[in-house]
Image 1: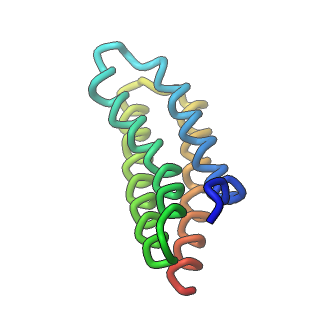
Image 2: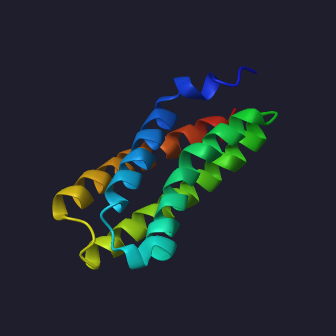
Amino acid sequence: MSEDRWKRLDVWKLADELAYKTYLITRKFPKEELYGLTSQLRRAALSIPTNIVEGYSRKGDKELAHFVNISLGSMAETKYLLYFAHRLGYLTDEDYNEVRDGYERLGRQLWRFYETVRNR
């Protein structure tokens, strides 16, 4: 199994891009949130693509499905943390709407990918 196989996945590409955007927008968060909300949000967002990569390094679809399922949980956590950060005024409406819409799109793709892998 090629270590770069996951780079060809559209779902991974979108997860990677959204994790990157999440890192960029959290740069604007207050410094007192560095070890709180900023850190938690970044870990959750980065967990989505990294679990896809980890699943691809395992043997078989059952394990891949397990790691994609973890990605789904991390995505839900990320969406909530973004919502919470927006409520606190840490995200502009524009930034929030952009990443929220991206994570909604990712959720649909990730769910389809999970079902495909699980049913193989």
